[in-house]
Every structure is written in C-alpha cells, then in structure tokens.
Image (cartoon, rainbow, N blue to C red; front, side):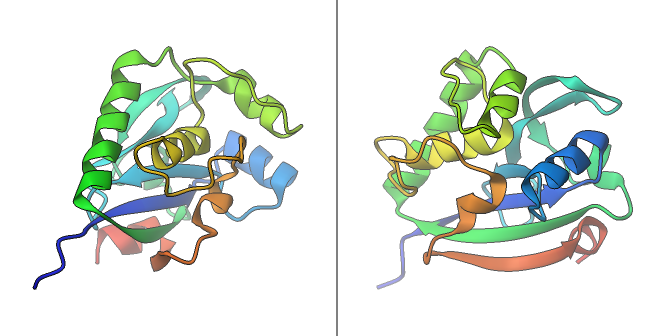
Length: 176
C-alpha cells in the first residue's frame, strides 16, 4: 500500500538585515527567521515578517517569496527541513495557518523582544518562530512540544522526525 502521508517544510533563513544581524548577535544562532511551507520548492510559504523591505518595525502575516524582498540578497542563506505528517495533521496545519491569517492582529515585535528574556506575551500577534511553533503544536497537530512557550527558529527543528533536505544560499536553492 502506498504511503498516504504528506510533507510540510520548516524553512529557516538568515538575510543579514539589520534586525536579523541583531538577533544573531543576541542568540548566536545561524538563522534568525522561520517559515512554514507546503511544497518542497517553498512556493507556498508563510510567516510573519516585515511588510516593507526597508522598514523592519511594521510586520504582518505574509506569503513569502524566495525571489523577492530580503531573500534576494546575494548572501542570504536558508535551511529547509522536511516533516512527514498524516493527511489529518496536514489539513489541520493548513486550517491553523488560515485561522491565524484571518484573525491575527499583526506582528508581535514586543513579543520578539521579550522572548530574549524568556517572557511570553500572549496576544493575537506573532513573530516568525512563534507562528510556526503555534501551527505545529496546536491541539490537533501535536508535532512540537506543547509545554514550551518560546521558540527560537533553530529550536523548531530539534526533533528526530524532521529531516534537513537543503542548506545553503537562497539563490542556489531557487536555481536548483
């Protein structure tokens, strides 16, 4: 019988923008941004991030494009992780993304700043890794540890059932 499971993708990136560099300095992590994608080429990819390329303090829920914005920087890098899920989990993840898109109140810049101090700010706003964590730890999905309340991007992929399928420059991924 053919495997009926589906795949989703966690995408970590580093664009070397001013905010991304500041996050790197504070966390010492290689990646400063997280997204979730529903296809291997990351053509359908979502996260929370800046609305305007040159203004980092106004963020929104967005469909991201690896060919636009900060991803176009020549030195921007990413890592793509594949996660196998059941058809039920896949639909629940899609539903959760849609629910957050429809009900969110914007970018959680205050939550991002407080996360460094391990303080959780509860509101209908998200920063990137908080969004991916919420989608993958919701009651009907239960992929990530629901007991953890704060996640840095790299902590999202610290699981045995998540496989890295690419790591390198964004331009190399897009052109592959």
